[in-house]
Image (cartoon, rainbow, N blue to C red; front, side):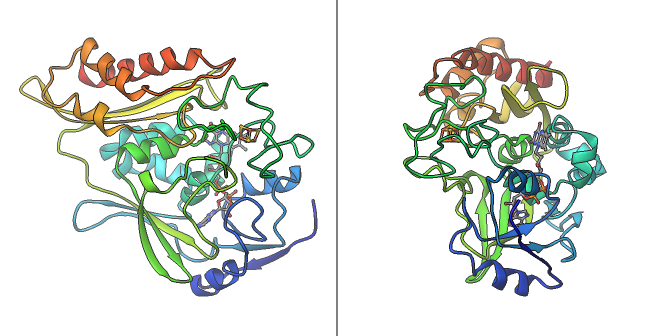
Length: 332
Ligand SMILES: Cc1cc2nc3c(=O)[nH]c(=O)nc-3n(C[C@H](O)[C@H](O)[C@H](O)COP(=O)(O)OP(=O)(O)OC[C@H]3O[C@@H](n4cnc5c(N)ncnc54)[C@H](O)[C@@H]3O)c2cc1C
Ligand code: SF4
């Protein structure tokens, strides 16, 4: 690991000003915010991230979790993943979020990891994590060995000829299904970014993963109040029962009235270059009676355009079954 400066920020403005001195907020950033450190420090040890300065944001008081007057849920950027997963408001109103967090990593990691850090974790593509390999995400223009190589875990949706990496976050999948909005304070002011617009598809620049610019500090996220009576679930399919990233996952939420679906929302993990949600697939469920066929049709629509690679074609059918099974669990 190279030498770096560690600064403990005591106010957000100073942290943002320091962050704004980086030329990029994406791969290769010279200044990084340090939250739980469970992604960043890992990548620094591997030589994948080489920031010159770390700004510790843990003393900025950004760790609150509370209900707002309009019924929405406020979650601070440095709220720990464990605190969020076990919070009574989350367990009662956002079950899929609690389950998604608890399906990830380990207890020890979740006790340290934070909301913003989780949303900004990096792909687990093995070539990205190995500086001896070429990788367009780590070094633009160097190539993508995963396309002809080990791609079993990688993405089938939203990929490009330059990168087929998967977004690995479980929490982001559930937050996407719940229409979460990310609040950012930056050098040019405050922005609210729907999570659906937060991640950028790889295209020819897979090193650019989000819309963040230097100095952008995620302060909190807001989850709108769920519809009354909504049931939700997070289903994660993986190679072993714990401490493993998703092959495929689904966060599904539904409201029923008179035997018909009145609201449905779902997002997929483990298959997309970013957490994946398709509005048309959800709308097709409205007014339908819950049935295997209705869920299967929605799943087909969601997976339209999938581009499997040599070793991950199984994800197409697995993802469809994951969606169907998740909806069956919350409608039967
Ligand atoms: C062995 C292992 C297994 C894991 N398994 C899973 C799993 O199954 N599912 C899953 O979803 N995750 C898994 N994870 C990932 C884990 O959830 C993330 O490492 C963690 O959530 C990152 O949070 P952090 O606070 O430690 O982030 P950090 O490492 O501190 O930061 C990550 C990135 O976010 C940036 N950042 C942090 N906070 C802010 C902010 N407020 N504003 C702007 N930028 C910010 C940092 O600069 C850095 O670039 C695993 C991790 C490990 C090590
Ligand atoms: S899939 Fe993306 S992250 Fe993996 S080697 Fe290719 S360019 Fe790098």
